[in-house]
Length: 172
Image 1: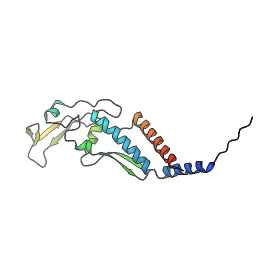
Image 2: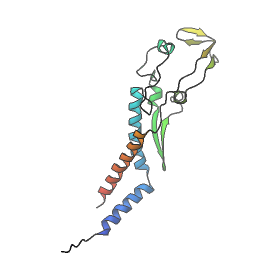
Image 3: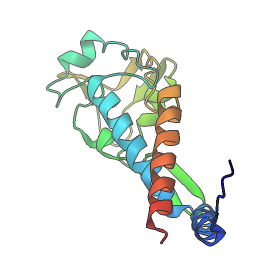
Image 4: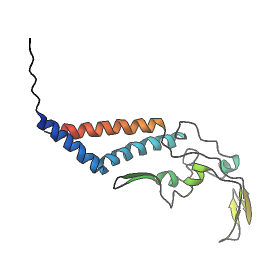
């Protein structure tokens, strides 16, 4: 008994060339990673979880007494978490916060030490309806907003596989 297998390498060559081009110019694939990671992180933010799935530390009673919140521990106005985005430039993907409305994000990510806040542009600070020239801020506990846990790493692997499968399937 004998078998003959014919292999047409031209289709394989076109498929490999399509994958090579996709990897050489990865902006579209990086955009797919950015979309998936943005969604995963936004979902964690809505739930008040750090990248590893642990709940953020509760807010101080003085913070809660300061007024209404849109929802979630770090969502008083909604601007900081709304400034969370991704950006693709060349072969790089950046996932993070804008410098403007996202400014407090770095203090939540890393926490902060106790410090004094002094009124500079106004006569007094309004802290929960109490006016003071200076306030001793107790600092912030770290509430990690961004990371790259194993679940996100697996998400990138899955998105890459789906993306490259679609590229190969487009080859005729």
